[in-house]
Structures are given as C-alpha cells and as structure tokens.
Image 1 (cartoon, one colour):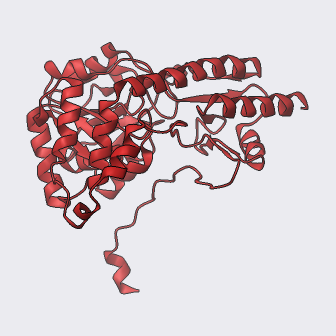
Image 2: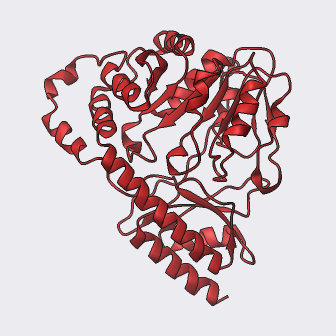
Length: 352
C-alpha cells in the first residue's frame, strides 16, 4: 500500500495490565488505593451540568491559582495538562528541539524514549550505576536537554538535591526536567532550586498521591518564560486540554491538604511495614521513596512469581527488559490488600 510510506510508525508505550475483576488486588500501576478528597464528590454533585455544553477555560485559571497558592509561586509559573504525560509531551515538543541528543537514564519511565521517537528527537540513554543510582558526572556532556524522575521509576531510588542541582547547574544551555511524580512519598523536591536556575522545569501529577488518576491532571512549575513557551505550544496543539470537571475537582483536591497528608501518611506507613515483611520473605530491593517497592527474590525468578500472583488475581508489574527483568514493581495497596499479598507469598515461597 503506497500510503504507508507517509505514516509515522513508532513502538508504543506499554502500560501495566488493566484488569477489572471482582476481588482482585491491583497493585501494578501505582494508583492510590484510597479515594480522593471527600469534597470532590460534593463539587461534582453541585456542578452545573449546563456548563458542559461550553468549552472549558483554556487556561484552567482556578486550578492554576490553587496550585500557585499551594506551592508559593506566581500563577505565571504554573502550567497544567491532562496528566503529567501530557505535560511532559508538551515539554518535549517545546524544549527538546535541538540537534544534540537529549539525555535520560537507561532504567526509567518508559515513555521518554517513546516521545523521543514520536517527535523525532535524538536521544542517548545514560546507564545507571550500582544500586540504580544516577551520577551527575554522566550528564556533563553536550546535550539537547535532560529529563529524569526523582524518585526514579521503576526503581524507587531518590537522588539528593545536591545531585539534582549539580546536573542543572552544569547544563545552563539546556532545559532540565525533573519528573517528581512520586516525590510526595519521600525525598526532597527541587522546587527551591527554581529561585537559582531558569533552565529547570519540575513536573508533578495528581495520579499518585492525590488519588485522581481517572481525572488526568498534571502540572509543571518553572520560571515565567518556560511557562509562556509551553503555553504557546499547547495553544498551537489543543487549546482545550483540561475539562471542566477536572478543573473543579483538582481545585478541591488542593484545598483539602489535611486529607492529602493523612493519605500520604497511611501509605508511607504501609510501605515501611511491607518492606520489612518482604525482606523476611527473601526479597531485596532499593530503599523506596515512592508508593511502590522494586523487589527481586533471592531464589525465585520474578517472572514465575508474577505469573503465580496473576493466577490468584493479584497484579504486580514485571518489566521484560535487560537489567530489570528479575524485578517486580509492587505498588502499595491498603493494609488489607498487602496482608493478603504477603500471606500468599509466605505460603507460596514456603512450599518451594
């Protein structure tokens, strides 16, 4: 077929399984196991449905203001999008337009190379070091931009603010994107560095710590010039990206800080307990600063454990990739869910 020569072909991102079974335990996509802020149900019930016939606010101004107030920055420093994937995709289109390759770790969020291929951006993957660490020295070379998550996914490893600053300061001619999808669960945000560096962009999401993966809300914080450039690309691509229900629900989620922090505290407490239990079952893992644990077992192959758990309608994530194919990424569920997982693993491993 002659038309195929004009088709853009890429290898797509592969998400985790999305089963929908009664009684399943779904701990494979790092979703929050608890509901979002209770006020969200109220604002949805009170939403004037007649407004849905109108286009939403192109700037998502109420949500931008709520985020700016919460993080203590100017509204002109905030950009919102349909999940952090949308925000990062816009950032790739906007800031990674040079001839030099962009840099990101070889074991990281697996959408980065997909976007680079899709937008025809040259890239170079930088190998992680022992214990899945990033070394700042590896990023002191010619590049067209840098992106990395902190804490990293899927490893859960957090790099200190000193490492982040060393990378940002060494690359004044490139935009450095720090993907902080999991920073609420541990570690330290790079937000204070925004006062010193105009080439830093920080990306966050409502999908993990704010329990709103279904609403698709992401945002970026940076200097005003970066935000203007991002918006220029957004308005050239799709002016109406954020829908009205997401805007009003996002504002309500930001307002209820007490609920947000209480949910984080519960998940972190469960994570720390599960770390100890998994260690006792023969698993090892990097210390996690996220809402998941990246674990390998001393005797049992990860693929075998993954398949066995799946037979029990327990879903964890297995990556069939070099360097991490013997690891499982286990999201943190409720205490009851994790108790069931640990009990099954205890019996399964004891029998073998």
